[in-house]
Image 1 (cartoon, rainbow, N blue to C red):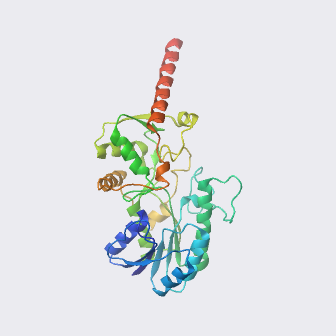
Image 2: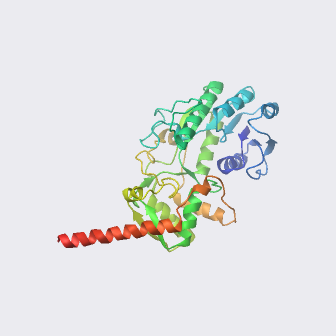
Image 3: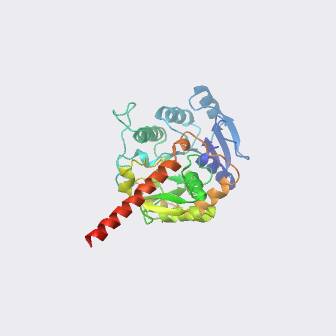
Length: 344
């Protein structure tokens, strides 16, 4: 199969190229050459998706049997791209996000859950995540308008694994490696369902190869692992003797701990880890264990790579703040025990 990948140097895009080459496909990548090294073996075309002339030149290099687009961020960008490729691409796989759902992250989701409505200007007071979801919903509309039933829409949740530039798993690995008392959010039995980037890539390629139409939530099965198992895997792979101190969600909120950023992956909403991806699993999506994801990410980090991006810079709780919260938690426990003793 002749395959075009828009991007191809960072995280999911890079893994897509690696796996596509391994599967024997003829791969072309289209990117600006600013976000990382090209994968050897792929044909590289330099260009900017926001430049009409670059898109014309890209189309002239076709045709391709399919395109996989993990880098489309705005409706205008995706609309221009789909218009340019409409006559030279047979199938379009677009990587969207679960943020397109109105109920994310507060309510459980299925592939049929209501979507956000795209409008160029969002409502007043719209959050960054809401804006991201609204824009991605507009991107989906642009793909469907151009390719109709010849398109796959993938809506992944949290993606972890080697080459992760966001830094969620790398932060936890780094923090656990340091050791000492580690602020662990919620409870060890809290069920989560992050998915490995390599499993997302494999399913995206399946969709391109088999022409699987429609939308698919892409996540590990609900209850795939727990936060306790996740942090235990971090402790094991780093050889750390860190002590995990589990602190109630309500206590963390009381102390204004920022969900998703100060303690990456922690978000105290019912729908965060209730994404039904059974349709994708029935179509061939498989998910490796969290232990494998953690182990391989740690191995990748040992190569000396630096995880650096605007998003990774926002992650993590400071040592001083973590210590202060743990101290407050300890004092709360002491007071509670004293009150129980007095009541007895």
